[in-house]
Amino acid sequence: MKITFLGTSSMVPTAKRNHISIFLEYEDEGILVDCGEGTQRQFKKAKIRPTKITRLLITHWDGDHTLGIPGLIQTLAGDEYSKTLKIYGPKGTKERLKELLKIFFTDKLKMEVFEVKEGIVAETEKFKIEARKLEHRPLTYGYAFIEKDKRKIDISYLKRKHGLGSHPVLKDLKLGKAIVWKGKKITPKEATYVEEGKKVAFVFDTKYCENAVQLAKNADIAIAEATFSKEFQKKAGEYYHMTSVDAAKLAKKAKAKKLVLTHFSQRYKDVSQILAEAKAIFKNTEAAEDMMQIKL
Ligand SMILES: [Zn+2]
Image (cartoon, helix red, strand yellow):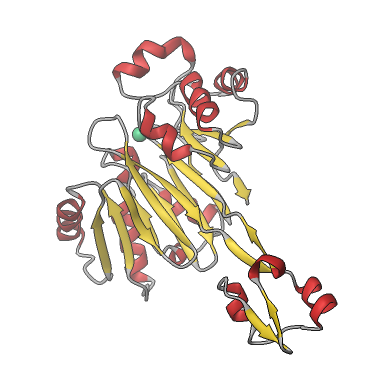
């Protein structure tokens, strides 16, 4: 799994920070979370082909999260994107996309649009995506990418104990079923182990709230907005945003393994103060920069 921070600013982009967008690559899936202005150019800088996108998750329809959508769709249509792009967003997403397409004449692209409600909004054999409503204006959802646990076969045990190497019969063991080999029963309990799936949470934009904590619960990486430093605590609340302290408290309460801060206000040329404030509460914190990548 690879996470690329394509943009890390909030309402106004700066010379160093593009509007917010994060790209998560997992096997043959490419999940783009929000698509601020200029996101497709950030793909070029990151040397990632935008045609890798399989799903777009829209947290809400503020411009800093969505202004890049028409340009991106136009490019994908021009690249003869052969997949069906799955788009998820709050109620109203279908209507807004329809209007955008009307303006930009990009009806070539195959799209499937889902207006999300709280709960699991997408699920495959290997992962699921959860949405939870956050506290922001307008209607906003946060998302969590949850990889499913994997049952792995203990090959060295099987070879040693049963003289069984790679064989089609192992498929059943992988599914958690007992098998019979040379007259002997082999149970999944003795011959397999479970590798816990990874979880990545995307929490923006919002005030500190319980749903944000739930999204980040036991996450390997909680990516959260820290629009302001703590001196603007009151202002942050009024604008339905979080500070460094809110984000750190959230990660701590959620027992996340790592916190990555993003969505910084343009007022910060340097976010070291925000980072230090968060680290004082939750040590394993990092501040995202455009083009930063994390492998999991
Ligand atoms: Zn925003």
